[in-house]
Length: 76
Image 1 (cartoon, rainbow, N blue to C red):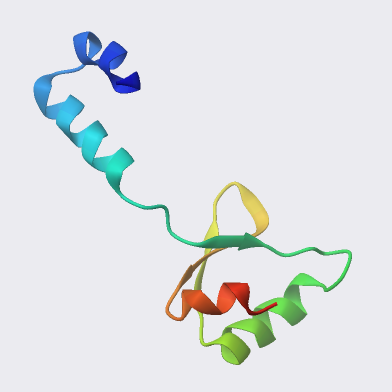
Image 2 (cartoon, rainbow, N blue to C red):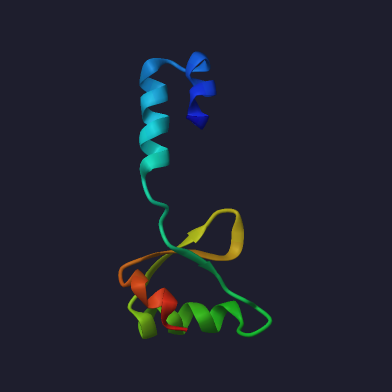
């Protein structure tokens, strides 16, 4: 297993937490293409149109994590 190399460096509790974290699915996320739509328009219309609850991602100004109705990500 690729994680086995970390086991000697971590406590058993930390290693178990690492395995649990990697087993969890990533939350759906997207990045707004600002060449096609400005951020303010996307922020004010898309959550309402698609029924999303969005949280900004800290490392990308135009990125959001989506919760609620995430299956609408594949609509367009």
